[in-house]
Image 1 (tube, helix red, strand yellow):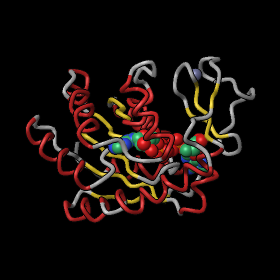
Image 2 (image 1 turned 90 degrees about the vertical axis):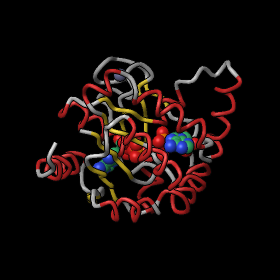
Image 3 (image 1 turned 120 degrees about the vertical axis):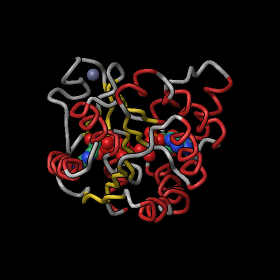
Image 4 (image 1 turned 135 degrees about the vertical axis):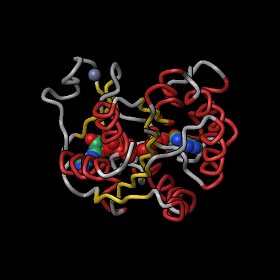
Length: 217
Ligand code: ADP
Ligand code: ADP
Ligand code: ZN
């Protein structure tokens, strides 16, 4: 199964993608995580961080290439994958269509988590991530048992450099302009499903499982 999880910044893509990956044994491919893992001592790592800090999209050429390299790996080819944070504009979506045709791994379903803009800033600003295992928490909606310590591995939690009110403004406007048009793109392809992302994390997971139980793998 090849899934795509969509939604505005802070909608809950990463949180839910991790649960879907675990349930269906898929590889969780997050472009944000790939970019954050680039070595910050290199020119490329520095450039990417500047785009991210400004809330701008990384250029398509680089983004498409990194995704293709990842999806070609054996684990993805063998198990299927869930893409999180890609595509983010119509050009990337077209590129993905061409590529998935070549590798014969077309998208099974596109899941869009819908959350109204006014809730997204609070979600992003309260987000905390484990430095060690990448688990995601929220100071109010999904707090760790001990402040700033990961429940599952004991790692230290940190706040992303782009999870500020200021950068979120740009990220939300980039979403409206570039990413939202993908909804119509995938509706036309007939593989689109929308989920109410304002529910609790567990309820959203349940809704996603329900959608997928009716989708043929
Ligand atoms: P969120 O889900 O909160 O929007 P991500 O971790 O997916 O955050 O993305 C963080 C940043 O990484 C984006 O604001 C952008 O700068 C960059 N990025 C991630 N995915 C893409 C992509 N597909 N194309 C271009 N830039 C991307
Ligand atoms: P995205 O990958 O779409 O940017 P995340 O999964 O990282 O979003 O979630 C953003 C923040 O909101 C995190 O701190 C997460 O714990 C929290 N969160 C995710 N889903 C929900 C939800 N349904 N209700 C409340 N908070 C949520
Ligand atoms: Zn951890």
